[in-house]
Image (cartoon, rainbow, N blue to C red; front, side, top):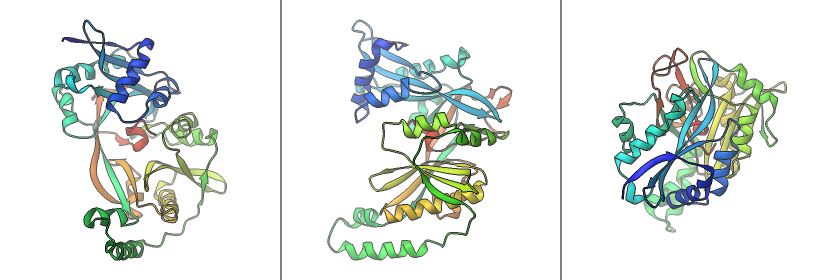
Amino acid sequence: MSTAIRPASPDDRHELIELLERNIPGKQTGHFAWRHEANPVGRAWSWVLYEKGTDAIVAMTSLFPRRVYVAGKPTICGIIGEFVVDVAYRSLGPAVALQRATFEPVQLGKVAFCFDTVPHDQGMSTFVRLGMRPNCDVVRYALLLRADEFVEKKMGPRIWTKPAVISANLVLRSRRSKPDPHEFEISEFRGAFDEEFSSLDKQLAKSDQVRFERSAEFLNWSFRGNPESPARILVARHSGELVAFLGFRVYDGRVSISNLFGRQISSSGPALIDALIDLAQKEKMHCIESHISHGSETTAAFNRTGFHKRETAARVVTYPNSVVENVALDGSLTWEMSRCDTMLAG
């Protein structure tokens, strides 16, 4: 049966959620409302692939507005997400057509540019067909804290693996260097984000970066309003003034850093990461991981605290991939991205 693409309407909401649940494990209703309707920058745009004749929706994609600083100037871009296709319709033709649909808000001037985060070479096929290439890579960094999971995968959950686990954990602890002294007061932040976070965000708009906003409004939506697992925040202060913060989530014994952001990041960053490592060890977490864009100013803080560079987690592809507001997106600017920028989980 032939298919066609059209913009989604509010009447499609129930069918869109059903499509997402067929292709993405887990209940989607709360996530859909958070992503599409609660976004402080505005409602998302969606497009659907449907069967002619039956009007059944068999694929979709969405574009979510986000505020971003391009060379220090605030503007609005869009992040592409919810690209799902029912099994029977997974071919390059419909995928390319859906991808082209997400460019429409850019062409109409509703956003300055849009971008997708592509996790593997197969996902790049639609962009290659469109003559597009990555603007930057996002790399996973990891720090192993406990060897239990690793040893059991290698040797199996046998009684004789326990001595190997104990020995490996002792080695990991011995490799943990003593944290450097610092002048920051580190604490866990449990309240609502307020103006001091918005002020820090505005202070750090830099002329050599593409960097996504960290305003109180965004942080409350991303970290406090997200229906996924609760986010936790560590803050670094000096004489009571907010200097930097680190956001993270815990999944099945693993710590995932959503964001590290602030002033004096070469010193405040390691102080926050060291505090997180201590907390994770006390809570018997297995490892800590973070996603960092190539060239990020936070890379040195992770290297200094014992993290190791792993695989490329995503390739960032933008449309248009040339110039926004007379500034080149590819080449002259460093992309400053972390997990809360590459995923809608925050």
